[in-house]
Length: 144
Image 1 (cartoon, rainbow, N blue to C red):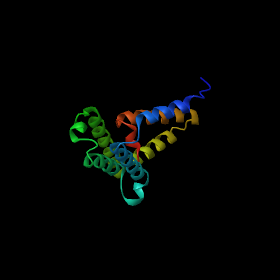
Image 2: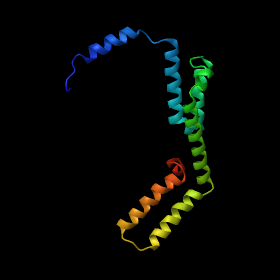
Image 3: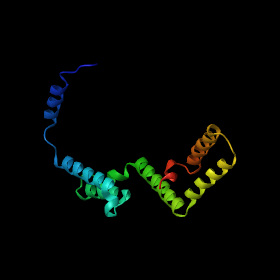
Image 4: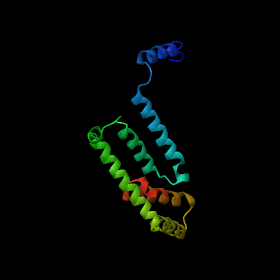
């Protein structure tokens, strides 16, 4: 399909069928906008990404767009959030306590002392980078 001249007309008809945005849809759009804005600009005002997400969820819960019961019914989503939060916390502490910089400089020193050409040195570094992701359970361990 290279040409769809009827698409704008069809889209307009479908939007008319939906009618105007409901109050809950407007609140959801606002909560999304606030969350994204805090996620992007929050660092400059001291709001981290987790706090931004909690603000967005709080807006939806307080306005009763989403109920807590509906949130709890999404078990896999909470599992994902919990594991990701743990990985981010682990990454932050690995970096805070200097493990990530130590690991990086150690790899550079060891590979540099091998006296290899750049191709095998690059292959070793790529392999170490790849396996260190799995050793720390995620690329999140390299954040920071």
